[in-house]
Structure formats: C-alpha cells, structure tokens
Image (cartoon, rainbow, N blue to C red):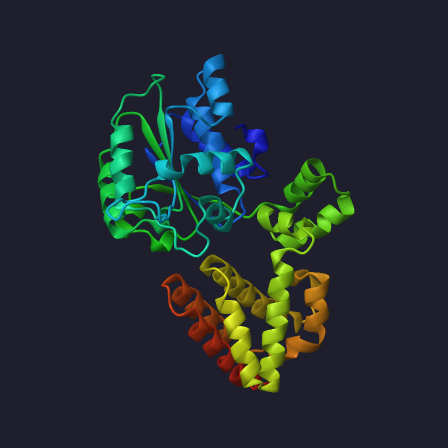
Length: 371
C-alpha cells in the first residue's frame, strides 16, 4: 500500500516520515483519532515505506500485504468449533483479515465482526495473542531490515494480554517497530500509554474528502461537497451517505419512533421498541446509541439557528424543525450522560431489553423538561 491511498492526513504523513529521515523513529507509536480518519491506512502505508528496500520481490509482497516482516494483531472471537482451552489469536482469522484489508484500509468493527462470523459477540485481544507476538518478533527479520507490528484497537486487549505486551514494549526485539491504531486510548493501561509516542490523527479535511469522493466514487463535485460536510471528517460516514437505505436511515427511524412514543407516553409500545433494539447485535446497539448521542447534540445546536454548526441530513433536519425545541439546556446533559452510560452497559454485556426500556422510560421524563 502506498501513501497515495491515504485520504488527506498530509501533516501526519510528513511527521512520520520526518522521524525516519532524522533517525529518531521510536520503537512504539500510537496513532489515536476518531473512526474513519484513516489511522489504519496511515499505519499500513508507513509500515510499507519502512519495509520497502527497493527490491521488486519486496514491493510485490507489500502490494499484497504479505511481507513476512509485517505482522498484524487485532481483536478476535471464539468460534464454536474451537476447543474449550483455546485462546483465539489473530492467525485463526488471518484469511478473513487479509481479505478485508485488500478491500481497503477503511473499515469498521462491524465489518470485521461479520467477516469473522460473530456479530453478537464481543471481540477482544487475548493473552494467547501476546504469546504469539513474542514468538513471531523473536525471529530475525527475513529481509534484514525492520520488523513492524501493527496492533489494531489495542484498547480491546484483556488485562493479561496488556501486561504481557507491556513487557514486550519495554524490551523490544532489535529493529522492531510497534504501531498501535487506537480509538479509545484512555482504556489502555497507563503504563503502556507512557511508553509509546502518541500521534493524534485529526479528522479528514473537507477538501480531501470531497476530492476522494469525486476521484474514487465518481460523483459530481457539488454532491461530494455536501456529503463531505455531512461526513464530518469520516470517510466511512461519507461512504454510508452514498449507500441507499444505509444504516443511518434505520437509526433515524428508531430515533424518531422513540421520541414520539416517549412524548405520547405509550409504555406498551416503548416496550416493543426496546425489544426491537435488543434484537440487534451488540456492536449495532452501540452504534445506535452513538447515533442517539449525536442527534441529541445536533437537535440542541439546531435551536441556535446557526446552519454552519449543524451536521444533519435533510431527513434529520426535517424532523428537527419541530422536535429540536424539546432538547434544551435543561435536559441535554442528562441525555448525553444516559447515552454514555448505556454504551458502557451494552459493552459490558448488560441485558439489552432492560437497558433500552430504561432509556425509553427516562426519555419520557427528560422530554418534559422544557425551557
């Protein structure tokens, strides 16, 4: 993979390459930033530049992401076919991971879960993974240069794995570079965070998003600019906007339904609503709650009549015209806290029916808190 496949992020690219040119590349980097900003794309492009020795054979391996000195670590699940004492490792899903990467370095956890065949499970990085990584990185570089270990979503490591990885980072094998691709760095051990050099990746700028939509998706510039602004620096959101009947359409319907039923205090219908939400996979439930959080913010801001501050589709704005007044300074903080609590609870395998029915009942009270 080459730098030209990364959308925007020129500043981050220049910073990474400057480290190499000035011979001050740290042995452990952590790329942090929002989903869809291109952290994995940056990590892979940078890794390929480190491993490219100018030989045709190396280039061919890097083009296919099959270089023997490039290692990937990522969250996995336990399949029913695995033995009871088996700790899943990345190699168990190497084929699925490679196919996903070859489709492009921009993807979601949901896409990865679908590729593994476990949409209703929680994916983690196990202690078995750290043992496997120690074994791989203890070997000499096959090409005589760097060995690169890309760790996707290290915040999903269990505590045993995190402690073992910490020891590996403290005493790294010769010419080994760790590149962590992280979205929630606060969930990582402080001892790990203190031993890596963090680089914060910003959202993709609107101009780069627009250009990529025109060049990669062949849409006209006017539509590309609208979609780029709605995507708010997230290439994955931009792609979602292009999909007819995308998930956001369903999320908006479920949001509107919740608010109308809560306003009308239809308890029985709210229970049915919560059962529908509970039927979704946990990753999808968390995405809806994130959408719920976003819509709270957008409706609150809409009341200030500053168009440049809101990021809604036409359908979302049509609903906000009459609804936004119900989201105000008296309830916005409580709504945000409620959403964040439920995201945490769903992530900890709480009973989804109880979580969403409680959310629905809370909204009855919160919507009554008018200005």
